[in-house]
Length: 249
Length: 167
Ligand SMILES: [Zn+2]
Image (cartoon, rainbow over all chains, first blue to last red; front, side, top):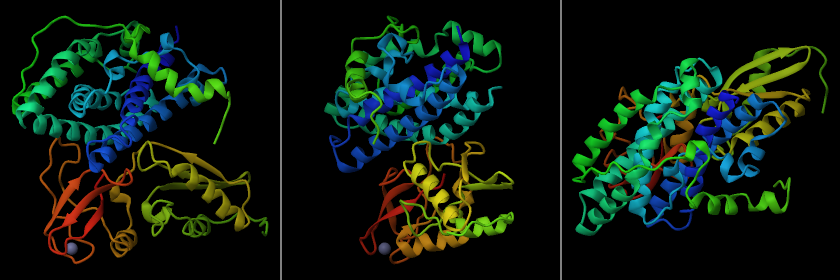
C-alpha cells in the first residue's frame, strides 16, 4: 500500500465530505449571517481538499487529477471518518458535529505543520489559520446554544449524545497513520487526543452540557466501511461527472 | 502586442502586475494584497509566484489568467504562474497603499494588533467605521461576503460595513 497516498486521501476526504455537508446549508441557514458563515467554512474545507487531492494525484503518479479523486472514486475508496458524513440535522446538530471535528482538526494541522513531508506541512500551515476560525465559531455556538434556552440546550445535548459514538475513530490509528507517524510524516494521534479532550471538556462545561459517558463507539471510515449516509452524499456530489464524464464549466 | 526580445527587469514585471486587480475587491491590486511572492526571469520567460489568501479563494483562477493576460499585453507571452502555500499569506503583507484604498472603498482595513491570531477566543477589536470614523462599532458575524471579510455595523451612523479581517 502507498501509505503517503492513503494518508493524504484520509485528510482530504475528511475535508471534502464535511465541506460538502456544510454546502448543503447554502440557502437554508437559520438566518442570513449563519448561512454565509456555514458556507464560508465549507469553502475553506473544499479548498483544503483541492490542495490535498492535487498532491494525492501527484503522489500516485497515474495521471489522475484532483477531480478524479473527488468525483470518480466509490464509497469504499473514501477514507473519511464517520463523523463528517453524518447528516446535518438541525443547526444545533450541525454545530455539534462541527465542534467535535474542529477540536480535532486544529491540533491535527498544528502537528502536521511539522511533518517531514514539505507539501503536507505547507497545506497544514495554510489550513490551520482557517480552522482556527472554524473552532472559534463552533465553540461560540456550542456555548450559545448549550447555555441558551431550554429548547436549544435539549437539542444540542441530544445531538452530542448521538454523535459521541463517532469521536473515538478520530484517534484510532489506521495502519497508514502508524506508518506515517513512524516516518515523521504523520501526526501522533495520542497527542491530538489529549488536546481534543481538554478543549471539549472546557467548552462543554461553559456550555452547561453533559459529556456523554457511553463507551460504545463506531468506526470503519478510515478502512472504507461507511455509514449509509456516504452513498447518498456521493450520489449527489458525483452525479454530474458520472452522467457527463469530463464535463467542465 | 509587441514581443520584446531582451530580458525584462523584475521591477518592470512588478510594474505590469500593478495593473492586475483582485476580482473580488477591484480597488486592490495583487501587489497591494501581498499575494505576489516572487518574480523569476530567465531565457524560458517570466514566472510569477503567487500565494492564495484562503485555501478556497475562488478568485485565484481568475487572478492567474489575468496575470498571464497582462504580461502578454506588455510583450511577455507564455508567462508561467506558480502557486505556493508556504509561508502562508497574512494580512501583515497588505501594503499601506492597499489599506488606504480599502478604507476609501468602504471596507475597514485589518486592525494592527499584537493579539495571538490563533487564540481560541479573542477580545472584540475596535474597528473604526470606514464611513464616519466612529469606533462605536460591533461585529455582526466573523464571516462575510468573501473569505477575507467579517460583517460589522456602526452604532453611530448605523451603516453596516465589511471588515477585512486580520489573518
Ligand atoms: Zn459609522
